[in-house]
Image (cartoon, one colour):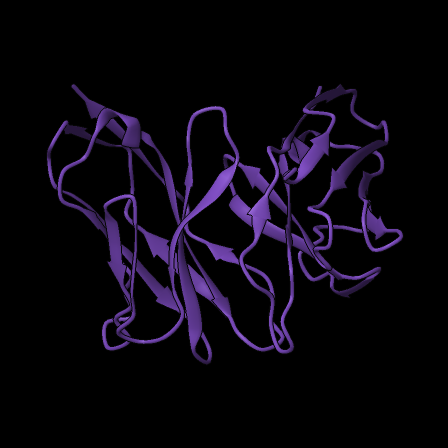
Amino acid sequence: GAGVSQSPSNKVTEKGKDVELRCDPISGHTALYWYRQSLGQGLEFLIYFQGNSAPDKSGLPSDRFSAERTGGSVSTLTIQRTQQEDSAVYLCASSSRGEYFSYEQYFGPGTRLTVT
Amino acid sequence: GNSVTQMEGPVTLSEEAFLTINCTYTATGYPSLFWYVQYPGEGLQLLLKATKADDKGSNKGFEATYRKETTSFHLEKGSVQVSDSAVYFCALRTNFGNEKLTFGTGTRLTIIP
């Protein structure tokens, strides 16, 4: 079956512009996660969705970052007024969920964002 | 808070050598522990996991044992191959409500023929 897909695979943008990154999770997975992979900070958690709600947004680095999920499926991560320090690979993951906790997280290939 | 400390890389080994990548953790509660692998040009893949103390995770010849007394989850393989060249990440997740993975910094492994 299809895995987690992300688009675009690469995005180059000018400082100050807004960008939108998209994630299509595995069909039927109710949990969705965004992470960021950068040279200086390693792999960092950004936000977690269960269905359309986000019970954990603790990793979003500033109010320039926001995310939404609609229909319990596709998610969009938006970065407003991009800064050079936002340059990173943004990873999306999804998982199914049992009664008390989520199962294995499956990762997408990532979107490489470069802010010039 | 939760944290994972992982062996610094890069690591370069000859084919058929023995591999150990050290990983220790700090966590509240009783975490589940994971090793993820990222092959060149590919996404993160789960390599193996262990959900409670003394569990051993294994896959593709790799093994790691959950040691609560030393808070460690070291990755081992008896005989590495060129195809094992990748970046390896140790990670933890505390169960029951805290869903996020906390990752180590990653260890780049290169195997030379």
